[in-house]
Image 1 (cartoon, rainbow, N blue to C red):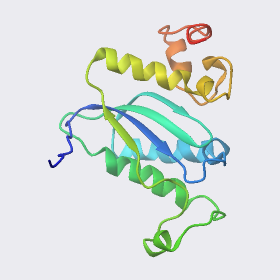
Image 2: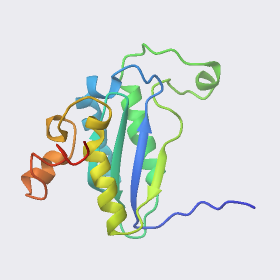
Image 3: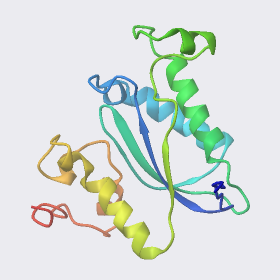
Image 4: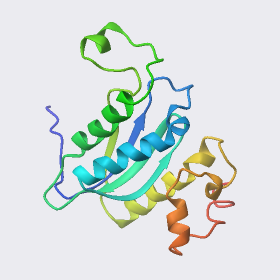
Length: 168
């Protein structure tokens, strides 16, 4: 059986991107650079960021793509390339990466999931906001600085106490 990849133009997607060396806090140590390249990507290839969290070695995001557009891969490529190019070269990388002109910052692939309905969306938003607690970086989701939970709290969608006792 041959699997055909499904792209939904104008769809809503959940993503996970991971750095190559999981033991290094590259993303949080370079959060301003990541923010800059992310903002630049949105200017050149608009999307709506529904939720996002950046952890030291990976990030999760939910995007709503523009109507008729399904090219999330080029958007993430732009973020990964521009982030990598502006970092000092301290990582090691193998011959395959060198041959392809790649740095050893990001894992080549990323996880993508098409959001199917409102329940699926809310489950993934909760997953994103609770992720820093899950990985032991903080005891309360609100305490993690690199999360869209702060926007949800400012808008009155969540409270600062969200997730404190719910997942214990």
